Image (cartoon, rainbow, N blue to C red):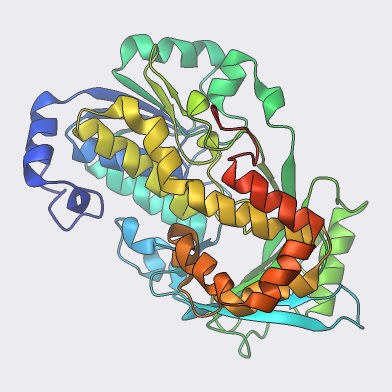
Length: 416
């Protein structure tokens, strides 16, 4: 276990005495799902001295991951921040533009610039491959190209002390329970890596809201390469995804990818953070990452949240408090969800003026702090009386403010 020293991003979270005690107790864990959440869970549990088996249905050598190319809180990933490990551009800032529409006559309604001290635009498939290789070197039994059936998943709790469901949404837990219908809503996105002239945008990352329920982006990886994409929420889906993707690239001056290069993926929605769904004490099964529904509902950002959920779970394992994981996860991320739920209302109501005002107000906050410390964003909004008046006068925003603090975003908090 000497590879996990005090500089490790997970080990550094623990008191040395807690770490020693956890390693003396030991344990065994099955981690199902080998993307970022699963890799983080396997890493943290192995750092505790546990015997860990990681199941990933694809081969890391051939895995085509082309979503989540921008990662914040990159310091939590225990890899050198070098192109050889997939970290190709550390953008100084994320620029967010709010437009009144998606036509040539659109007007810029607001803008935010969010510094990024610890963010990278990545080749995510290479990040995951490198992390999996590191885990194998450190004793994790990495079983790639290995699918787990529902029956096999149910049996894991009889073989291991802990089962970590890192399979995304709908999660393997939901499939085994037959409750996948609770994750009906989703965001659909298309993206692709493209070659072209990005010298006027590099090295900053760019996100555009164009007055539809979704957004577009350009994440430069160099002056000549970028990941570009566009996403839409359910209920606002185009008839022809690729044609809409092409139109977004053309109006924003990005190279148009070939249809065969475009990747389609979904960000399902569900009862996010519901403590009743994130931990099963009978089978000792915990959900992390997308399986726990922790992707941000406004930005779609979920990698740093996924890693945090996995590290939090392992931290509680080390402290002998794993049963408190549901409430701890909820408390850790509820304010982020409240802010995302409220701001998303401006999108759903077609109010770029309100969304633009919000971006102007919170501009300058570190891109990760907007999520992790949303009190800063709320305090900025509190100093904008005219913007607050707009929020209060808008029925949708007013309703969302009430719902957010009643914990009624995608599930109603028990006892609320």
